[in-house]
Image 1: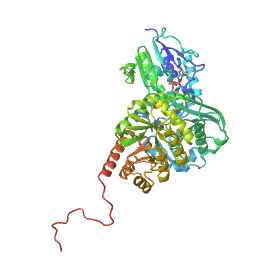
Image 2 (image 1 turned 180 degrees about the vertical axis):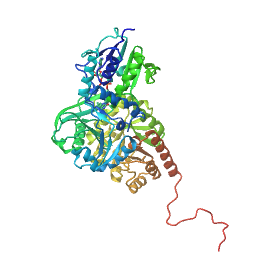
Image 3 (image 1 turned 45 degrees about the vertical axis):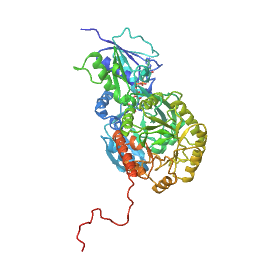
Image 4 (image 1 turned 45 degrees about the horizontal axis):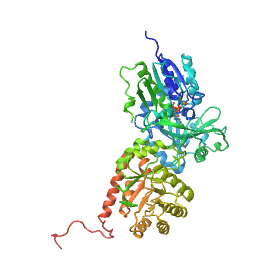
Length: 336
Length: 255
Ligand SMILES: Cc1cc2nc3c(=O)[nH]c(=O)nc-3n(C[C@H](O)[C@H](O)[C@H](O)COP(=O)(O)OP(=O)(O)OC[C@H]3O[C@@H](n4cnc5c(N)ncnc54)[C@H](O)[C@@H]3O)c2cc1C
């Protein structure tokens, strides 16, 4: 029997952690090196943690739902705290047309009238006359899920190093590069799409599932966490600046949250932050082969949704599990 | 069509905001046949070189760029943004937007005229986003503008031409000035209607980017703009109150 392959994974965002765990589960000896002081120093720490393939399909290329579906079970298995409560999509009454458009362009939902909505989510107290419900969707807290993956990796014999941007490739059979936007200089066409978010504590609200509020100018979502905490996100700006959130963006996020539930008026502001979603031109991810290095990148808005699937492709590519070469692998030379 | 002495191949001008992805944007630009795209500087400019990737994508489209001052609420803000845009895009063309009212995003024509004057004196070629108000239009021309861009309806509303009477009056009033209907277009028929009124071009964004298939919609708008323009050149018949038979009556028995 050949000795286990030694794999170095760079970057402990959701991509790196998912790849590291999947590789370790498949028998590799994994070292995960993160440049930042802690795991989740990148975009993954700020994410909403929505696992919403049907809603995301509204603007994504065809095939996203099928691609992402296995991820939901993967998360339920890895992170038992993953909540499978579905997603609600709402619009203020004057934007009723937005709801009709969204319903037309997505699948996996049913329409709720005011009574059904109140039965499902009593916190709305009849403020919304109609909603779309996506029962198959789920959500998790990235700040619980990423540490859970790191814990799992260690339990499988893997090593997690932080503050280490510079481990040489030499000792390893394979390198999996999951550095997110930092890989921009080696991956042609990779860009950053700025997103801003807010964390609030609002004891008076009591929503139990992610809610997306459609709006012609600023669509916003609210994702519940434990202890009455809510993540409110997210702006989408074609900018590669990582600096602090702007007042205008925060006003939009807060205004939308307040429109959703007046209880947010009394919320404590725990945190606001901004980061860059790594993305390619079609906003879909790639696994790119560059010699002994595999790049897993470009997950855009779908890091949690797609990382498990890409991790599976990486396992096939590194350990040769699949009978044929995985189709999604792109050689670096073919990147624009 | 000539705008500020530059020949622009297509009468459809396209905005670049809010597409599902840069690849879809690029395909839509190609399908539209446009020769001039607007790009918003405001937000992308958060930092010095912050928007670099997106800008180079826009530059790769191979069409002329008209930066805009979208989201500016005062003449001063708009002037600053225009100056930044000139640096970044290396063009003195600027679509000037000064918003006066939050709900309708109606232009602040007072701030607009002032910013247009400052920018024109500074060598900019100003494309002002204005209303169909003839007095404001006159002032904009006096301030140095050589193109006028009245709204069809509020930005992003997709309502079409709210005031065809006002737009017709504007066309009649400024026969020699290139006029572009900017904003409010939702359907190809709206774009065709603007062209039939004798407008030189239409500028739109959401109607394409927010549609279910932006590439197909861009192609539909290309056809509509061509159709409306061809119809205008062909001198449409006048509407009549009476029916008039279109089959010749010659040779029919007269009883
Ligand atoms: C506000 C916001 C909300 C979002 N909401 C959702 C959501 O609800 N659902 C969803 O699926 N996605 C969401 N996303 C998208 C998601 O966050 C990204 O798709 C995902 O985080 C990308 O993961 P990544 O691991 O590729 O990158 P990152 O999380 O950025 O990880 C890259 C890591 O690499 C490290 N690194 C950099 N250089 C080196 C080096 N030289 N050596 C080692 N390590 C290095 C970085 O420090 C970082 O920790 C959201 C994004 C934002 C910004």
